[in-house]
Length: 367
Image (cartoon, rainbow, N blue to C red; front, side):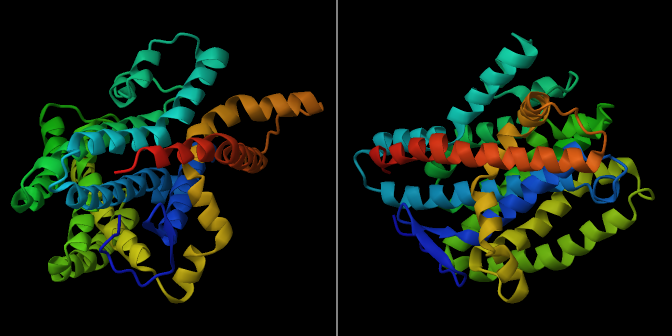
């Protein structure tokens, strides 16, 4: 498959698709924000004021919406007039599942075996519906899987819309997806569901981040929409960036309901500009940072970092320290370094010995 997107950044071929290496660096930055949120005190500036954990997850959503939609648009073009359309669609899903399911279920097994037992949340995790479970129950070692549940639900149903909705209505579909999220949050407030964390665990509340990524992919893929894409990207920088900054500095001086309704949409709009720039290839110092090889590599293994990080902090690090005869450090900073380094090592081993060999099976399921 040949992508029609013309990129100016440094790219390399991967499975006949141009691999946008700066997007890997964005993944690394996003997952680092999640680690900061989970392992450093909530009063830490990046958590209390900036909210890097939430921003990291929303950046992942925009990236997912962009990449999966771009792949689907390319797949749709290749399927037109193809008599093996359902075989190709089946292969598309198999390729997705080979990437995301194995280490997800591996970690679910480990946490079930060594921590939770056959917990009520198990069936929700097994069916990728845990975001709905955690909207009404307390969090545990597997709670970070809520965002993976939302992405899986998106991967499951979004391809059917992109592949089968008439071309002339695709943009309307994407616009509708984006608009649903703030309307859903307003509806939740009207129903007296005022818990922002709970609301944002519900799938419709995340449609704006996924949808804005999809819209960027739609404009990038259709070169006759280049002016619309430029407008969207500029809106992301000027409007999204300005309002995102304003929301940070006015954190304690804005109506919580208004913040709940608009914040995720505004942040996602800003991330559209970030993702667009990285897809094309930022230049100067920004490009140098986003093409820094260790950062790109961390982005490549970011899925493993996200999947394993809670289990590593809860089981692997304490077990290693106990084996070596050390007590668990009281310093939060030392805990953070130990947890981060160990998680990266586990993710590296997983990538080398589990994920890459499984990914190689994709060659049997071409679309």
